[in-house]
Length: 193
Image 1 (cartoon, rainbow, N blue to C red):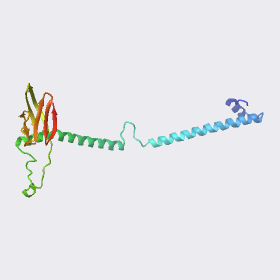
Image 2 (image 1 turned 90 degrees about the horizontal axis):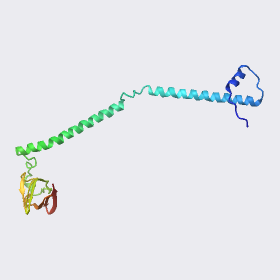
Image 3 (image 1 turned 90 degrees about the vertical axis):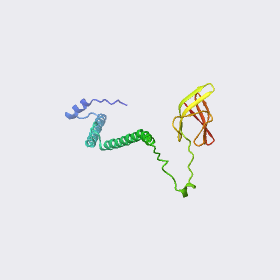
Image 4 (image 1 turned 45 degrees about the vertical axis):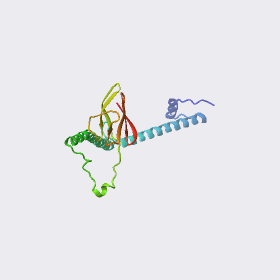
């Protein structure tokens, strides 16, 4: 099989000068060249049409630096979320201050609630384990003393092993250099430094 000679200049010159084709094979080559040119032209037109469509679709879109309407909604919801988070942080920071103020004035929001006498016998208060915080710890030989803050007890009270708290429900079992062992309602707990 002969290789195709892609000499477009020669082919167009012959077509311009209306020279007769010598053989059916040369005529066949000319048709192939014309067909290839038509396909290339159609491909270029198709590409240009797609380019125009893409540009027309993007003409209404904002520029890369400008936020769109969806971006504005996202920004607004992010601002609302930040505002809620800041309000939560403010409430969390001020909550201990409000509790300290209420304690300083001698008010307890729980103590004010007293059930009526008819319901007093039917109402049982659930047993909550108190929070025990070590304020100071002294271990000198066999002498062991600690200062604890316990819910429902006087703040900064001094305890020795065997001391009770919470109306006898809690008891200090042992004190060592690393913490305090204690019980509450017959369950053993440990508070470490």
